[in-house]
Length: 380
Image 1 (tube, one colour):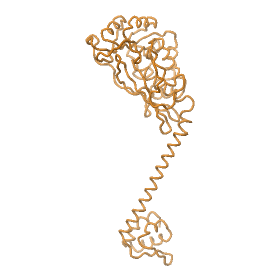
Image 2 (cartoon, rainbow, N blue to C red; image 1 turned 90 degrees about the vertical axis):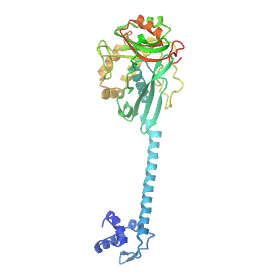
Image 3 (cartoon, helix red, strand yellow; image 1 turned 180 degrees about the vertical axis):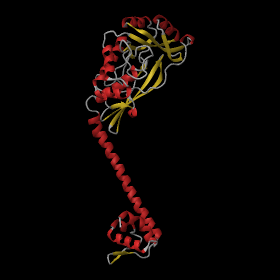
Image 4 (cartoon, rainbow, N blue to C red; image 1 turned 45 degrees about the horizontal axis):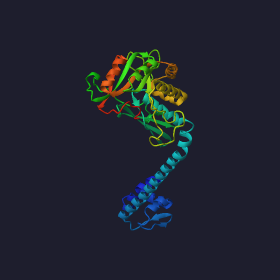
């Protein structure tokens, strides 16, 4: 008789409800199986006569308790092995796999920088002042809160996520490697109808690129407000890096903050597994459109420098390596031009800036109560 069948019949054997032929088969199994004999230990001693087990004076309740105790021991042993196995796997991951394999070379720096850059470049006005990294099970994740500056305050836009594993890079939970920031930043307000006792953040757009020198002159002529983000065209036509990116009928564009800091790892090593800002993320105090262009060019170089980043964009974002390379080549020009600016400051001063800029498209992104201490650059 098979062990599993005999074990299921033990209770009936004790209760005396088995057919004689079945009972004889169970007794024969008891003579050969130490495990089944162990199940009924403490109920009644087992005597062997003629090679068969003979049990007298059975107590069904005692037998059931013994079976339950035995099963409890099995369950306890199983859970113990599960806990031990889990601890071993986590130690293997944290002490060997993540530091040696996942974090090999400059992979963490490239992944963190790409996640940071995409969040900033694809969301006009986006700004980042902190980041978090967590070593997971055979992987490393990055969480990067993104904000929009409104006057000297901020408005939360969301959190950009990415995950670096043994074989590649993706967004959080395997999603596309693009910022998952959702929603439209527009407030629905009209700049003309906002009271002067507020601060406002607006995006201005031109259908044709403005020379960087002219855009810089405009910014310097209005030093009483802050140009916090500048967008640059990615080609003479529309080069779409991410589905839905860009405005219908106008060139797609990528941008960066005019006083933005280098992401950790962009040039000098990624900074290890710091939880949050490492204290060195200090923005450049003097805003500069040239600085913003330099950041976009650096970001594009990073995006194409590793196949796993390009693959993550190509798999999920619909942007081919050729699209990215075309944008990178165009942005390498000394002056690709400016097609977008994000400006924040007192409402009346921003209105004057918009009037002088002669931009045909003006979008209000954020409005706040009077919260202005002078031109803002990364909170400085």
